[in-house]
Every structure is written in C-alpha cells, then in structure tokens.
Image (cartoon, rainbow, N blue to C red; front, side, top):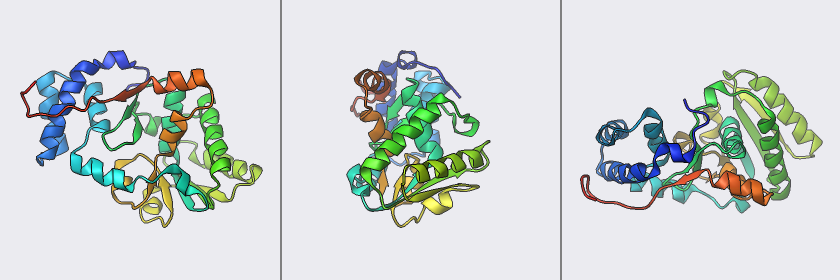
Length: 243
C-alpha cells in the first residue's frame, strides 16, 4: 500500500513504455497477472508501479466494453442510483489530498492508494461527502442508495451519518453497511456509481460519479491541484520489444 507518493516518483516515462507492452499482451489473451509480471520484470518495475498498471491498463476489449456501459452523469436525473460508498469516497478524498489517481484505459478515474481496507474517517471524508451531496441535490436522482462494506471499521456509523444527511438535505434514499455490497450493486435495476472493474463488468449502466466530481471541483485552485495528480497514459501501442 502506498499513501503519499507523487506522480514524479512513478517515473511516468518508463510506465508509458511498459503500459504499451502490457496492452499488447492483454490484447492477445495473456492473463493479466502473468502479463503484468512479465512486463514488470522486463522494466524492473516496483510494486507500486505494477499496482498502478494493474489499476489503469486494460485490453482494448475490456476498455471498450466498459466505455459502452458508462452513462453520461446527467442521465441519473429521476433515476435510481446506487453508490459504491467507499469506492467513490476514497477516490474523491485522494483528489482532495492530491494523492495520485489514474485515468484508466476504460475511461474511469481510480484511486491507487490501496486504502480501502484501512479506511479511516478524516476531515477529507466530510469534504468528499459534502461534494457528493452537493452534486446529488443538483442532479436529482429519484432514489439514492449508499452501500458501505460492513467489515470495514465504523461502516455502520458512516452509513447512519449518510442517512441523517439524506434526511437533512431532503434527498430520497438510504444508506446501508452490509457484508457484501456487490450482491446488491450487481443486478441493481438503476444506475451504479463505481469504478470497480468487477462491478462494472457485471453491470449494465455505470456512472463515474467520483471522476465527474473531481473534474468539476468548485474552486479553480483546488481543481487544478486535484486534476494535476491524475496520471494519464500516452496512447502508444506496438509489439513487445519495439520502440
């Protein structure tokens, strides 16, 4: 797990070379774990660099499939919305804290800090929640369901806080802390806010709520700081070994 790395520490030029080779292998059916090990060894990548590639690089087929499921955020108006609570919160918190994010080949912005299992509520959590609620008030979904992983410490308390906020803001919806939120999200009849690839791959309509909020932060200075921490791959492909 890494928490406070800067973009410069990842050596983006090397990663831009490595990601092209990784895509090449993935497009030819190599299992991702094996492909990542091969490319990581070839370029001498650290654990953090490999994790970054894992979070952001995908085959063309996977990327295109997810892009087709990604719905314009404006279409949540008057629709039911399920929010992958920790996924969305941690991604926005990472942007507010200027921790590195990655814009994946599939068009979703992801946090790469590995914080989910060790999540602790901070002042950034309050800021992130307020940004989410500000957007929900403008977007007007019909119902909003926040889902949190109950095995993570204090999830019940966080769900209660979100329920209280929903009532205070007069927003229809609920918040739950359950052991396996994916069981509700997969097959949810409305739209799902997440960047989790496993959930996206088994869903029909997905929105990148965290990515939208990050790219539209209200303060120019804050937006500049947050968006400058997003790693974007150079789109370059070619056979392994070619430069």
